[in-house]
Length: 149
Image 1 (cartoon, rainbow, N blue to C red):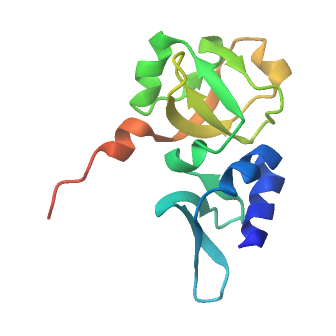
Image 2: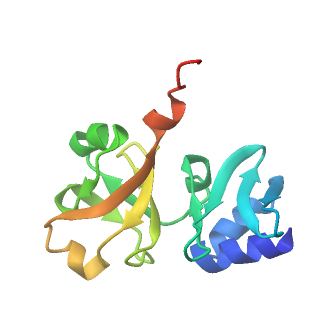
């Protein structure tokens, strides 16, 4: 259990690991004994990316991240539908984010609406051109239930 918290601390910072200390953390492993999914308080929070072993946060896991990008209200409704985030609509971003790192996308009121991969570095964001965050999962698509078969 302590090992997974150390991995999350390495990938997402000590603050994220400290938030996890107060929660129930469960690990699902594959048949070889490797980490496949991480559940926090019974909800899926992190999944393993197969090609490099990186733990990717889900919407529930994004609540534990300190690395956040705030988008304006105009872009927030499109991001909530699954669109990528253009650089010109990012209002603010935490200073410790890295290019190709995972970030939580937040609307101006502070609610997490999506999680995705930051494509640019902070210096490149100042150009205000192109898509800065490739959205992987949104709150709206997570709350929608598929129709029963």
